[in-house]
Image (cartoon, rainbow, N blue to C red; front, top):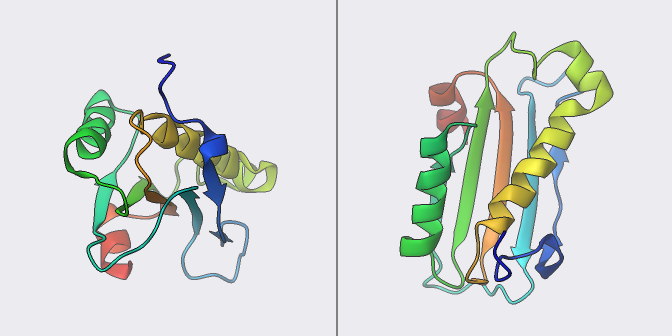
Length: 138
């Protein structure tokens, strides 16, 4: 691990939302929000959407986005979608909070990719369903 990588301590948690364990909810999702301690939203701030999963190309896409496009003041919305009926969307995962642990690990992983300590905002949307449906509802 590089010594210059961001640590979760340089990022501040913000309000998050969790409807995974709400049986009455129409959408099952967990939204985590954090921002770099020096993040400032401006009129020039941009928002980028990046799909994430556990494949190597997903990691490459995130690294490229952070290294080549992102500037101080920008925001990245990371979308992780799991299919209904998957192990992660199961009742056991919900009652044991596995989805929450997985999402928090993923957020820490995204933060570590910010090796240049860019002052950015991060949103991780961890949702159950089909990717196209989730994007249309966002």
